[in-house]
Image (cartoon, rainbow, N blue to C red; front, side, top):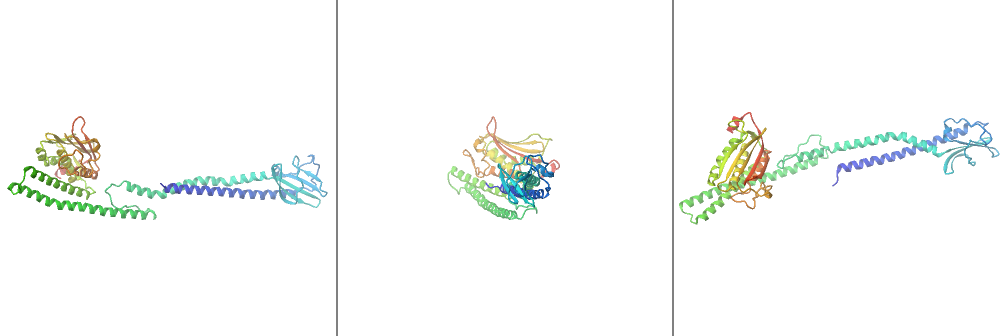
Length: 454
């Protein structure tokens, strides 16, 4: 996968390195030419400044002229008289053949020399110097010139890193804004005014996509809600007509057949009711939190399902652990209707999957500033391989029994997600049954009496 950051940094740093190399070569070449011009000028100056009486044998007994700083540069001086006889050459210096007047370059013993010849009235002067001296000086001049460039390159690379990171920061902000969103959040992205012009089309395209998804999702939720609402009334009427016909004898048939028909109608009514509840929960992605008593909600849920539990001979109860007072209301911040639906679905699911003579308990518990509850039953439990899937919509296990629709636990998961609660399910240890845990409700201590009335 191509990375914009790596691509930008790679090409910018490569371009900077290539430009620095070209600049360094240019600086060295310029310094070399300037050094050559300087030494040529000095060779010519030496030739012109030699005294007219400079002469002597080539045995080294004569005095060398004072050449100042050029003495360290191994300048070779040779003088010929008008007859062409060598009358002077530098001590321990190599003897060159007479070269034409002006500047020339020669090689002697694998060493290149730069020479200058000057024709005077009664003599011929030739001054030479190794080219390596010029190269050394050119290198020194280049190094003195290049050291600011050597400092500038790492500083520029650091600046490039910072600029690229700063330039790509809005993309990182957009990524974080999308990754931290919930699955149900389809609101448009609202970024500050520092968003670059190049990213605005992307943000606008994402907002347009989110808007279209929101419209499609809303249409789907509206359809499910309307369909469930339209189906609920005729199904209820059908059930009433079936019961009336069974009582007055106008509907004839075997008792088991009538029970099966009534059971199917009840199951369809339950499915429609769950669809309507699920559509209502999907239509309210934002939860309005108010103080509510979880103890009262638990008592109400146990009371509403007590008749169903009695018909199945199931012991249904409510327990309160870690109560702070004699009547601890367990007041929390939550949405009352959602919590009632959540607890009611868990109890209904537990009762329907617990055999006769079993037990179902709602256990309220505290942990610091958080409140939660467990719904524990003595049923057969769920295979470990299916625990991760039971919260999916319309999923029912292979061994599932009863009139379930496969939506009860999906509604529970939806409400728990809206309240940002921890929802877990596990089989009981050491005994049969299942335990569903809901935890994470924030304690609200100040208005417990008001919450009890809600």
